[in-house]
View 1 (cartoon, helix red, strand yellow):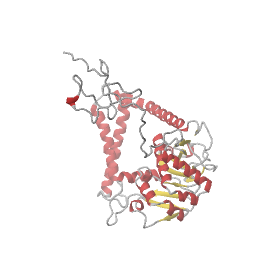
View 2: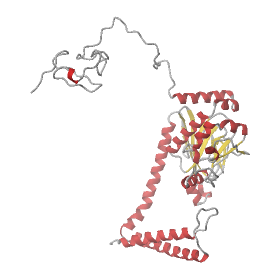
View 3: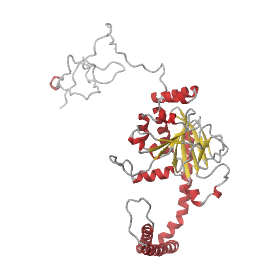
View 4: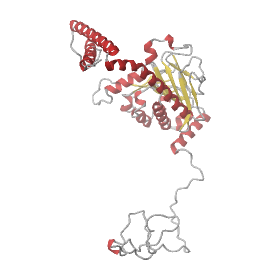
Length: 425
């Protein structure tokens, strides 16, 4: 059957009109900057028109999509395409997790049950130890990265080990409750949690540091993110940098530990880190961790590990030695030093840096090669310094028939090392 463009315009126009009227009829939020003037009567009229437009769009979609032209193929193919996309995403996630795990790590999911060797798990809004029976996760990957032992888990909000399936959750919770947590093993220290702060009213002399987009991201990433099940005390200091104070709320188990960790360098790092400043992060139960909203992807895993590694290296070594067991602290500091120097660590077989002492040239070595002869064996490039004499010849000083070559090249004369080539033409 022939398809009319007017049908599509009517369907999409009714959908857009219904959405706009619903937004207009929504009540004003407390503290909103700009309020739309409306009365109860106009709200009722808007809702009535929105319901009529939505019903028209839905009826038109079902009618034209089921019995007429391209709409029938679009609606019929949508479930198949959605299923293929779902299978592809699951396959892609397992592929990168296997690649990250390699030979020294492991991947845990419903087909490969088990527990990670360190870190935190989620138990109904709380971050518990990895060996706690109440902790649960959907999948996890544990691996070695940049000298550190790292862990990434994906879990669903509101679930624990007693929930055997997703049947106990509502449909919204099943589709919109996935969260992830990236972790880096560290010595056992007191609990410390940093929460990003949303936009607030400006004080005199302050400038806007966040945008509406950042405010939305913070609300999404930190909503119901797990926290340690401990009584944490809020710490506020006026001597902290302003860029840090307006961005984070600090809660800790030990105020002295928080003061020692949050040096000016650490404050500047976390306040300007595009990953940490929008998410809840901290340290607890021998791990540095950061939470996020959505699936555990390779990009999230890599960004989280890099940010946590930078944070671990920025904390002064004296803090680890003072608040963590001595053997664990020294092993952790060794890994940080190796990471800063790059891997593999320097060995005796690698070349040493040159010394400042000028070597004396041996008297038995022959002089520089002739200007037009072939380069010495094993070399390539222009003649050595001094082959031309005091300085390289100018354009008029080249032998007849020769032209200067670009630096780094060498030309062998066809008639011998000291004879100019013949001229043609």
